[in-house]
Each structure stands twice: as C-alpha cells, then as structure tokens.
Image 1 (tube, rainbow, N blue to C red):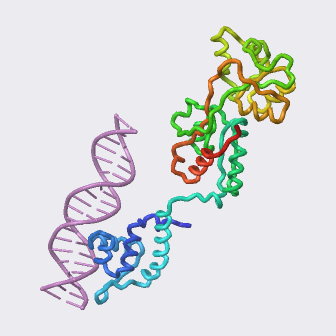
Image 2: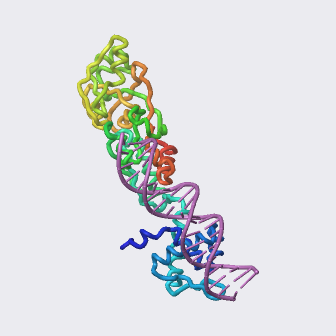
Length: 304
DNA sequence: GAGAGGTCTTGTCCGCCGTT
DNA sequence: AACGGCGGACAAGACCTCTC
C-alpha cells in the first residue's frame, strides 16, 4: 500500500474535514473543534491543496460539499471511529480466549515445584495459553528479560537483577538425602557423621561455593564432595544407588523421596533458608497478560 | 547527550471581500 | 449592514540539524 498521501496528511486536517462535513460551516466546525474560524480556513486550504479539490463551495448560507468531499465522508467517519475506539480501549487480556505463550526461565527444581499448580491453573482458566520453561542462565538473564525473550525468571535473590521488579514466590530450606538402609546413617544425623560421608553436590550455575562449606569451615570442619552436577534431577538417583549424601532444597528431597528409596533428614547444622523470587522487567508492570501471569504465580499452591 | 540556532507548523489577529 | 470565509502578518512552540 502506498502511504505517500497519508504521510503528508495529518490527523488534525482529517478531523477538520470531518467537522466541516458534519457542520457545513467553517465557523461552526471551528467551534466544534475549539479553534478559531481562521484556523479551520487555513486547514481547509491545506486540504484543498493536498486533495486537489475545492471540497466545499459557498452556496446560499452554507458550505456545500463537492462530490469528492461527499465521497470521503463515509470512509472518513468510519476510519476515525475505528481509530477512536482503538485509542480508548485499554489493552485487555482474556485468559479464556488468549493464545499467548509465556516463557519462564528457571531451574528444573523450581520448574518441578511451580509447574504442577501453574499448569493445572492454566488448563482450567486459560486452555489456549502456552507455558515454556527455559534454563535460567546466570549470564544474560537480565538481557533476556529486557528484550522480552523471557517473561519472568524464577530464581533466588540475585544482585545482578537489581533493575528488575520482583515478588517472592516461596521460602525454601535445606534437607539431607540418603538412601534407605544406608549403613552409615542412623535415626539422627550427627555433624561428625555428616563430615565423614562422601557428598553429592548440586551446583545449578556451575560456579560459586555451596552454602555448607563455609559453615563447616567456621567450625574447623570440612567434607569431601565426590559427585558434582548442574542438574537437580540427576543427584537423587545417584544418592539412591550409592552411599553418598546430598544436601539440597527440602522440596527436592521430599519430591524424590516419594518416588525413590530415599530418606529425608534434618541437616546436622543450621543452614540459612532462602527464597525463590519471580523477577520481571518493569515494562511488563501494567501489561494485563503479564499481571495475570504474576497473579497466578502469587496465588498458586506450590508443591511443598 | 546537551545546547544552539534555523526551519516548519499551527493558531490567532485582523482587515478584506462576497453573499444575503 | 451583517455574516461568514479568506488570507497575510505574526507569535509560539515543535522539530530538525549541527556542533561540541
């Protein structure tokens, strides 16, 4: 479509033309538009130049529209009404009809914690909405949120995401996991025994230190990690078939203890709890669809 | 990115002119 | 004479471009 004519016609000229068609008088059109008669006269001159037509001619007490002006009346009125409607209507999000796709960046553990409740809610209220979970890479997460590749990141408190908005989703604590019938672990796990065992360690980001080691160090103790993995899901299987001990988020321990021959134990030293937050870019603050998603995240009953 | 300076757009004022 | 449209002069502000 060639927009050359549209490009040099501004909306105010079209509004003036519409008012003239309605009033058939420069003075009354001016009053309707809230400008002086002269301003409408200037606008009419511009319209005449651009359209190459007189548009209105003086005829006994009124400005009579030419055939060209009359031909424009209908489409102009229709177009302006559609535009008005589009500008007035606030963008809406109808979960029942939406086919929007939301992308959440998170770990497999948080995905496992959050997804069941979230998916159930979507099936019920928003059957057309799609949910995609992608890995929360520590580098580039802020950028992915900024450019809109990711709608929200579900991660622990993280300094690198300072400019983003966030909301706490749930608190999490640590537990220990060993296999049923582990020969070295009795009813209660002592700190001495804990340090004597070989450990499995989950490092989702592949970097940094575990929370456990500095706390052991404070006490003049240490432990030996013989299995390191970036994925939450792999470690419990290893623990179920070995004498390794795993210190991990309690939800993970409980989840796998339901399906595998595993025991969940209280850690022999106090480990600081942490929280999982939903982070998003401020640009989504007022977006109805995003607000709806955030409301679902905030009100869902997550796996405990 | 901020500021300066030139240009363009828009609207008012006001006098002129044609019609009734 | 009154009314209403036309258009030139002007002002204000928006916009654009250039320079630092």
